[in-house]
Image (cartoon, rainbow, N blue to C red; front, side, top):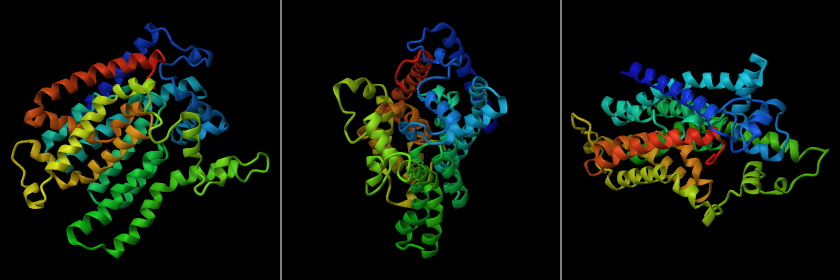
Length: 396
């Protein structure tokens, strides 16, 4: 069964690439920047410009510090190996093929462990073949594919209570995206919060063990900020910018606010309404499932663990889902009120809850019709998003 899913994941990856290249030859570019850059690739769009520049020249401009070093590091390695920037983009897309297949296998293993049903795990993994941003997840020099794989592995090791391995994978995830620090919550939940709720006490041994593990998850974030502080705040060649004197001198929050206008409710303007409508299906299914779960979670753990022989909505009422739902709610609210909301389309794949929620639609009788609608929307929007990407049209 997992082998079949891995092959299907690889096939989906190759089909996405074929469709992207077909669109690249047929669609007229809205912006000619990729042709000016002389990199003829359907993947050279949007943030790829920034990642490519950082890979070639390091962090030169202040705004580039909004991007973490994971993808530039990969591109730099591929470019030095191939001797060509163009080939590095192609090799990056090829490198994401085994990453996509490994992610599918990991999602199946994680779903089997959390939901306790191989059938539901298979369904969730099949649904993951229709992500809401297939080109950034599978092909583009973007952090989503790498981050998703590392996040899934860390979550799987947390479910197995293998905390060191979980921290290592979360640390890798954190080198690709800033929100990787939030994944530390899975370690804290498993080592401290869950034992406290079940046993009404916290193990001092677990408390001390959790500190370096959480530190590992935070390490890429701290390292990135330390490098920025050394470059901007302690350099004799330039005057220290305003953010250096803040209580928490974070260049990340500073450049996000300055160059992308990121902040609480700053995106809530009439002209941004389309960017709320586009990710609405993703946010609705995440919030709907989370609300249903939190409202119906049985307080009796023994009752929760008595599962029926065939998959049903009760399979989703497991305590193992609690940290995932909390993570989903936190990320969902953040995306809604303090981010460019359309990036929910890109980030959704890194939360397995999106596919568990879609599987829940199939098993929950009142939502059977919505399950089919979700599959059709995923297919249609995924295809449209590839066309928009290759034409250099939003959403980014």
